[in-house]
Structures are given as structure tokens and as C-alpha cells.
Image 1 (spheres, rainbow, N blue to C red):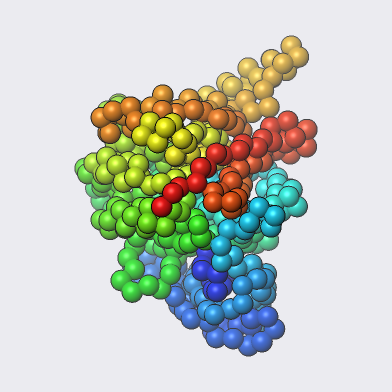
Image 2 (image 1 turned 120 degrees about the vertical axis):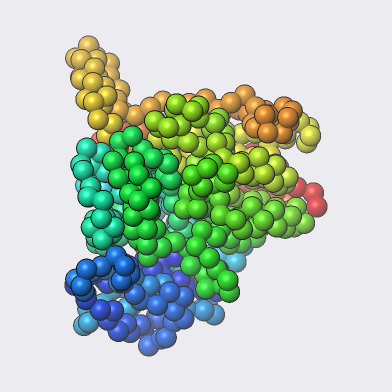
Length: 486
């Protein structure tokens, strides 16, 4: 038996944790200590089998998972100890601050992570990067921006069309990343986190049929895969707050004044008819969130699994590759709503490159009003065939004295000259690409108050076994965030 314990994002007076117990046939009793004293947390999601009865045959050893919180704690650092079946797990966690720090008090630091395929990751590289990051930036929050697991890999393996088999397979994928002390488990324990799923939490280009995944060719196959994948996403990743009426696919909002974070699930409830990519309540809550930002004069940070700037995929590319937010019927409402935010930073993953874009608003005398930050990937997935060719060409280039540190990775695509001009029907928002980042990477978004405004910075940390490569590609980008007059 093994235990995993990871912090989850929660208000400043709350410690929230996800706990997992592996190798059990029934949920064991949990006992807790908070800062050395016995404690009884509130169960937001009581410990239960990650796979429900419909996804089991008999009662095999499996993962049980739950989410718990300790309320009314003193803001600061706390030690949590959980015990199950005679074994214990310890976690030191720092609560979120009550507000962004002033200039002289350092930064509020958010770790940005996406696209991690365990089979492709070099052992120890994530640990080395986290060590470097935490020496420079004490981490307060992590945002997992999609593809925390790749349930549809290896590409050429034939999965049986059996939801029980699929659920057991998917649970193993999560277990590899969530349990242990290093690699991705270390990312999950580095700071309280909140996750947004993308397609590989289900399958490539979910919910549409994929030409490389035989299980998706039929409605029955897609339904079986969806049921199994959604159950594991719910157990391991789905944000849980315990609010009345909370539903699967709802957005997650948390405030660190004068900043508010809105994390949107644009994948789990995406419709096959492309009428929407978000759940039915997400855009309504987004409108309310933007109204609150305007009333308070706050900065909004909007997180989701795909870029707002991607143009809609064509009929062919959308069927063979990926469809993006602009392919869905609710994209116009999304853009129109976000365009009314006084100041916003959109953060995402998915793209397999890093990029920082600044958007200048004609209606506000060309002040920067939106930034988009892409961080992707943390461990690139192999593209069968083409990657071998790229590596061979790079080997020859090395012999000639050249070569690329990241031969398999794509260069960052330029942003469109104008943001969503077809939706807004005018060229209100012009774009400037501030930075492009190639290769496996993590990033830290740092924010702090300065006078009546906010200072922002994005620092990219390459993930590579070579210190020289890491030093060569590390980069920092300043974000201009003007103050907003209420």
C-alpha cells in the first residue's frame, strides 16, 4: 500500500488536500494531524474508489481518493500528516496569501505546467528544475493546464473496447504520475494546485472521433472511453470546493486581491456537434466574474486548456488533428465577455511551444489590455515517424558544427496580427509577440502590487538534462499591466 498527499488551491484561511491510497480493496479509515495535533478535516469528497461499481469486476486492489480541507487556519505554512492502515504521509503546505504582495515584499508566484507524458520524460529533470525554481521563486500556486496524463498513448497500441479494462488502464496512468516523491508527483506537491483538463485526459481531439484511436470510431466506443476517463479525471484532478450545487465541469474561481483567477474546463463537456466547448454554466459565471473585475478594478487571470488566439481549424485539419476553441459555437461569447475585462492574462498549454503575446486595445489608447502566456510541453510526446527523421537530420547538422538543442520541438507560431477580429467585427485588439520559447519547459508567472497597478513577469525554465542547455534557453519576460481606474 502507498499513500499520496498533494495540496489543492483554497482561500487564504484554508488548507485543502487531495489524498490517494493505493492497493486497497476498500476505503481505509484516515486519521489526521495538523501541525502536530489531532484534527478532523471537512470531507469535500470522502475517500472512495477512483473506479465506481460500473468500472469494476469484483473488488480488486485499486486507488481510493478524496479531497479534504482544514478551515480557519492561520495563513502561513502548515504540516499535514495523514495515516491509513498503519502508514502515514506528510506534507508541508503554504496557504495562499490574503492579497498580492507590495513591491518590497517579493512576488506572488504561480507555476504553470502542461503536457506531461511520463514515458518520454527524462528521470530527475523535473526535480532539478523545481529545485532551481524554488530557490528563485517561493511557489504559492500551481496551475495544471491540461494533458497531465496521456490516456490514449502509446499511439499504435490497440486498446480493447471495454470500459472496465480502460478504467483500470487509465488508473495506472494516473497512479504513475500522482504517487511517489519525484518527477510529476513532486510538481503536484510543490504548491497548492488547480487543474484544467485538455484532450489527452480523454483522447486526442475529444469528443470527436480520432483517426489514430480505433475505440473512437463508433458511438459505443466513444461512450465507454468517456465514462472511464471522466471517472478518473473526477477522482484525481477535478477541482472540488464543496460549494452547494457544484457540478462536473464547473469553473473554479479564487481571489488573491487585486487579482482573481478563473480556471475553465473547456474539454469535459465539449459537444460533438461543436455547439459549445464549455459547460452550460461556465460562460454565465464568466460574465459575472468580468463584471466583478470591472467593479473592483482587478486583474483577471483566465486559465484553460487551449489558446484563445488559435484560428479555427479547417474541416480536414480539425478531423485529422485538433479542433480549437474557435471551432465551437460559444467562442464568440467567450471572446466578447473577456474583451470587457479591465485587464486580463490568459494562460494555457496544449500548443507544444511557449509564447507570450501582448494585446493592445484601440479603445484604450493602445494600452496593453490582455496578455496570453503559453507554457507547453513539460515532456513532449513522440510523433511516430517524423521525430526519427528530425533527430537524424539534427545528428547530421551536429557533425557540421550546428544542430538544434530541441530537434523534435516546433518553433512557436506567430500570433495573429489582430485578436478575434472576425468575432468582434473590427480590429480593436492588435497583437505583439513578446517572446517565443522552444523545448520542454515550465514557467512561473509572478505578480505583485506596485502603486495603483500590478507588475507582472513570466520566467521560462527549460527542462533538459544539460545545465548548459537550460542556461541557454532560460528566459524572462516583463508584462506591462497598467492600472485600471474604477
